[in-house]
Length: 353
Image (cartoon, rainbow, N blue to C red; front, side):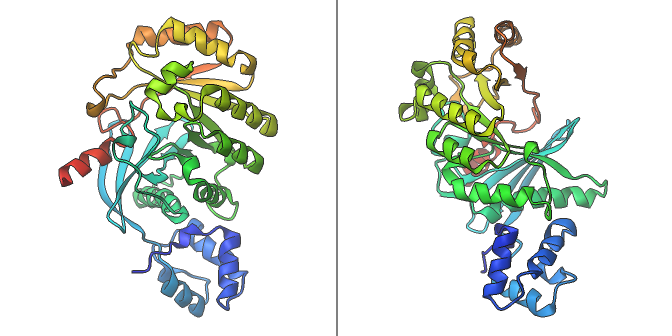
């Protein structure tokens, strides 16, 4: 089976590949037009591409590295897809509807090794990284799903927040971002894309140096090392001081705001004491950060954690706002389906066992 995804090439890379195989480099633009504008469903269906070029691509590449295994649709319009990869692994992708457009949350790894103690994604350890093509194809599968409804809807925003640590699959994620933002492809604006990391400090700096102009979100979830180490294993090797130094480097290099993600866990990190500590941690960076408070989606396997009640969320929010920290509470999507990231995949894997 040919498993080289045609979606795995940037426009420049595809042009170089065609040239290496005896075709004109310029034909890459026509191929991309078929992939991302006409959105053909097979290589053989491409038009305005020479027959020999179509044959060459058909022999060496594929557009199908995954199939839809399960789909859950929420009353609020959220759609969670479980895709089966060629090697039998399962990954999740989520379509969410907002007032500002349609966003898709993509997965970057099969499983996750970061080890956050509250997260469903890490219930199954990482077995491999996804290729660039497998990440891009998630977007294309969702867009084709939208095309079939014939309502003229387009994916307008992307969040790289699905299963896995994006910066642990750095090169493939960067290539994915280049494909998504290319004006000859889907042309999704960099400011409509957010990449979330649990805090790989060196990669945050490397990402800053690339200056891709996409948004960066940091999964912090605790204001001090003792608490963060307890709920996020990564803090043992990359403590908050090192993470904050990397964030400062990013702010200096890019002059872009950073989102601080903070999942509220009842009686763990949602008290006034933690809110005050968080404001002190972010005080010197207040002009450049926004704290996104996230209601927790309970996971059966992590029964020690519960969702904070509404009063606690409001008090935490008010404390940050009172201290001049920009803050918001994330709107929930898909609460009537397997809402937590990795939850649907975990349930399906249990059924297999």
